[in-house]
Image (cartoon, rainbow, N blue to C red; front, side):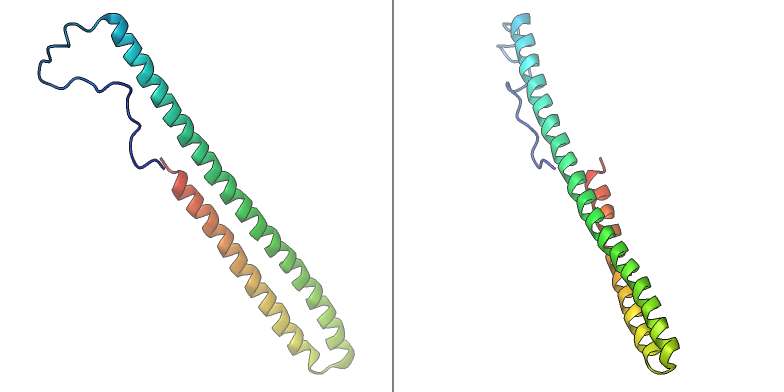
Amino acid sequence: MIEEPAETAVTPHTDGQDEAAPDESVRDSFSRLYADARAYAGAEAQKQKLRAGIVATGVRNAAILAVVALILAFASIVALLIGLIIALAQHVGPLWSTLIVVGGALLIAVLLLLLAKGCVGRMMKAIKP
């Protein structure tokens, strides 16, 4: 977020009495108020744009990782079915190789889902007021 507060158009009066204070007209006060309100509104708009950018990036990254994980999980199910067909046909080694491939692919899918969860968690922490 923004490290330093936005500067006001005119420095506000301090606690001590200033000789210029009684000379300030209502018009000057309103123009100072208007300038400060514009500065505040500009800073708030920048803050909201930054928050929207953080949310968009986090959602995009999480969606990409989740889609890749779902594709990999689907491919693992297909590989399991093909491996079972081969294992039933020959009754030897292909079953173990199929289990190793499916287990490895599912492990990668779980890791991708954990990465997606981390992206969402960082996004929520970044936009927390």
